[in-house]
Length: 327
Image 1 (tube, rainbow, N blue to C red):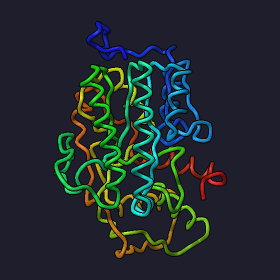
Image 2 (cartoon, one colour; image 1 turned 135 degrees about the vertical axis):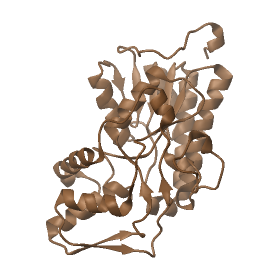
Image 3 (cartoon, rainbow, N blue to C red; image 1 turned 90 degrees about the horizontal axis):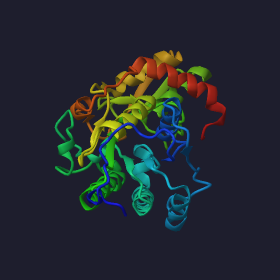
């Protein structure tokens, strides 16, 4: 493995548009947005494999693939993801699958001299009762939210992996922690989706069927921050070209809304006219999760897509693709 101490200059700069760029998870919510961003930015050799073509949990296959394509850059956006129900029901799967995906891709990247890697995590890595807005140095300062602690631990391990590579080899690998993301190619499954796509599907189906009542989990009082996936992709490329530091970087908008507010907004966007009920026997999750994005701003990036615009675009995409989405 080539080290920075060998005299190689790894100072962040504009990436080579003709170099091989591997996007792990290129068909997912974030990965597909990153592919779109790279294509629009002039990259000519973007590669990826579906999970059917390459199981990232299979270490030998991952090493063989990266050895074959020899990427110069990697964005690790592949992960097993889900909402409160999925995370709390299948913690073993979320821990084991994500640990294997991350260690396989990052170890293979190291073995194949990948110059620049961006590991994408999640804001759930932070303590449940972290001071708001959440700074990067809040990591490992308190207890995690129990409904997704297994997933969070896996993502924390990924951050540690990147930091270990930086310490041992001096490579400018980085980690970016997005807030709640939404947009095209999201998971709108009733049992596996996150809150915003779940609400879009629930309210759209209610509007189409003429239902007079929709029931959501919890109290509706928790506050959440939402970032469009195209904004996330823009931020990732910006960080890869401008940021070099061991600490993970929060990626968000710096503003939040209550779940009740986002539900009302989605109802308006899809044209739902009925009532909304709240099942308070179901968990709320973390009371508030707003990221401090000052480090991101210092690196020269701020979000561009406001929530109203992003929701209208996402609802339009959902309706165009509803017939082919996961049930």
